[in-house]
Image 1 (cartoon, rainbow, N blue to C red):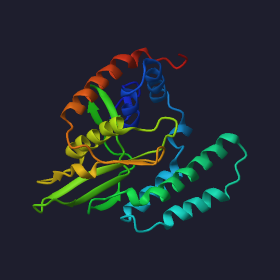
Image 2: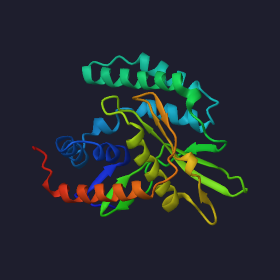
Image 3: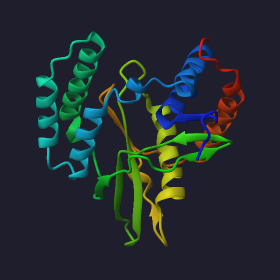
Length: 232
């Protein structure tokens, strides 16, 4: 387990970090080093509802309607809370509009662990927490496993390049943390659903160069981490 002062970053923020300028990179690391509780829970209701819908193999959409109904019934007395509720409703509605774009590639879906193991890359603990685990069989009948990730931020949506890095990390995570016995990583399962841009990014087929880029970025994170102060 990482110590409180050890370098750490979420997979989505690492992808954003890799495509950001220096000032934004430092802000990302500041938010990771000194997290505010409400930020981590901002899309809690939408994340849970969407994940449960996908885990039903995209068959049970009542998770979406029930969550939206509960959110609409809330009467927040703070502007920030009202904004969070509206953002969750918007994310659920975005998913409803793009649900036909989401493919499980014939696999069976299940909810991911709430606090799964992290990937350690050059001393940086990368928090993955894939919302969905996919299990299926390949063409030769081999058992396959992979992970699907949700991304919510409208302010910093993913693009094909950054989503490709997330996909590469999902494949590495599946290889290190999910496969058992003679299972194989189902690369096609390791895609990204971006609610912010209403795009579904398929898994990338080649990850070798992307992982080299990720390793270099993690070295930069580790180097910058001690210089990040709460009042910068």
